Length: 119
Image (cartoon, rainbow, N blue to C red; front, side, top):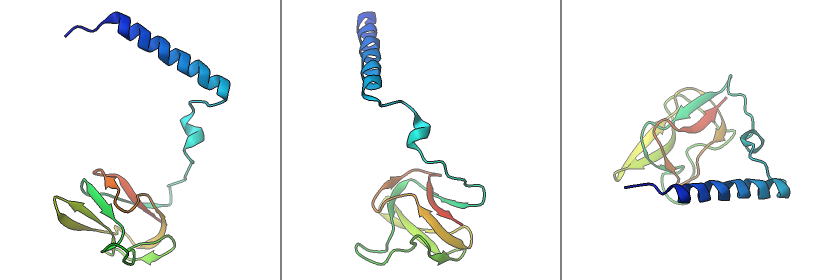
């Protein structure tokens, strides 16, 4: 399969035109402005042990395992990750207070993705 150089040149030109038009609107391509800086030096991060779908409660409409501000102990379930129709309980790796829940209910998660931040 050959790559047509004319098509690539047209794509590059279109991207440059788009970039110029965004500058006129005042939108900048600055990731640091979009993402909030969070100091994680004194935080404990619970990461997903598997790929799957995250559930914050044992059943739809049920009480959530972890909520912001709630104290939890090491080994307490912070959420369930469903993979291949198996519900896997994710335990807290440490004692602490839930500072942030980084995923939404029903959201797909990846291996080693940050799911909960403890303080």
